Image 1 (cartoon, rainbow, N blue to C red):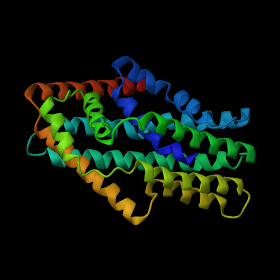
Image 2 (image 1 turned 135 degrees about the vertical axis):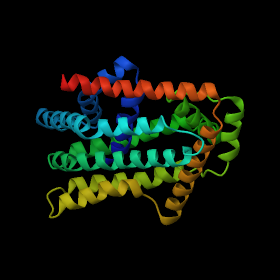
Image 3 (image 1 turned 90 degrees about the vertical axis):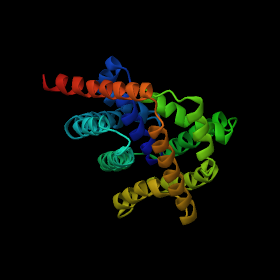
Image 4 (image 1 turned 60 degrees about the horizontal axis):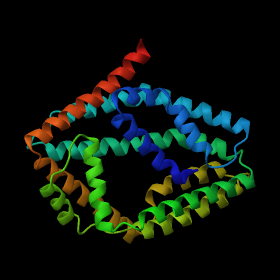
Length: 281
């Protein structure tokens, strides 16, 4: 259950802000269905369990509408005030807001996952373990054919394109040069994640033991901090490198790139305004 929780949170945030104007608001209206179907892929849930999933994913849509959309709008409005003097401060604040969003979302789903986990059979737990492991294997086969340096550049390129910025040759070379110290951690992460998943399945099978709920919540929270101290140190070093590169790219934007970025921000704000207007109308 917890292995895909971080992915789920990022999917929610990115698609909510980067879909087209019509489908962006439509995505929000159907977000409970999308998330419910996503979770239901983990195993063969009973009708009662599926109903339980439908209830808490529907609740998440209400949670977003009441507590998060206006915060997202505020972040986007702040980014519209970006200039060479405040770019670093604004980007750091945006990252902090995003991390807070992930944390808040995690807290929302925790108790619901615990309640659902208490209804799982041993066969379902094994199905979930197999599903998570086979998904990682499929993703690994798709990605290992691509060199690490190319993957890094492609991630930056796609990320900037989502906010309306098409990188030029000099900016792409800047990314390649400044990212050369990024640690390649995928294989180590998979090992730590595999251990976490195995521990999760063993914990779920012991759902009738005392203190199960507290133990499961603690384990879910550990997923965001997997790895030994050396691994976590390199993760943090990667994060700082990425932030530094993003700041340099924004400092290097041409007038046309800035114009398209601000247009994209207006576009995202209009999506949120449309959702808020629809729900209050």
